[in-house]
Image (cartoon, rainbow, N blue to C red; front, side):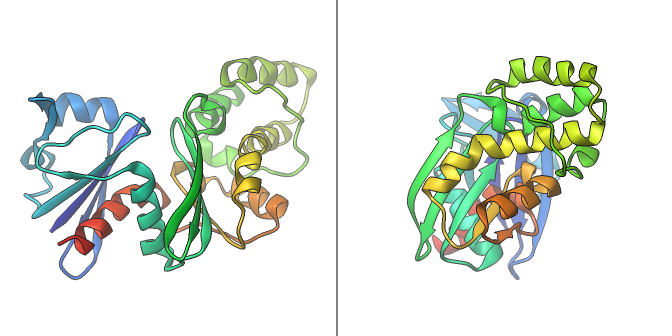
Length: 253
């Protein structure tokens, strides 16, 4: 059994690959994971797999969020972008595409050609185009993320480029009397406006959309409509990095 671990900013994703290539997936809150299942040993993170109830893997490959990559004891650690590119190739079987990965607190766009990363842009300095921003905006509107992800028509224009000031602007639009549907659509369009420059610079004929935000169907519709190329969401977008770790582990055996 191979184990891939993606140590994200908001959640830790674990993918287990059996000898037949099948996967099982597990997700843990990041802070709870570190508190309950990991401890620092000589500058490395030692994970108690037995306590996780995942068995003892034959090999562990790990990656981490942005520059916060943690050296997992006994694991082969690979860069985050490499893990996500390999995961996207593994899931879609494509070799030429633009990878859009929107996580809890960062956004990444990668140009992939002939199955290799050719160029990339990342933004981990501002949460305004991430899952955290969507969570905050849904809370302001008092709706679920599932409800937020349904709306993309007749968006209210939101201009703040800051996640914190964006909340204040959204509250102002609520006071003006705009419908919840239009406000939700405006929030989703705001995400697109933040990532559009990166997508435009690294655009190909296909966008592969991964990360937890890829579950936002409205944003998928917006990106596809505005960029005028197909958007492919893999079956397991949130586990893409962990799947990439497993695939790397299989290749490097």
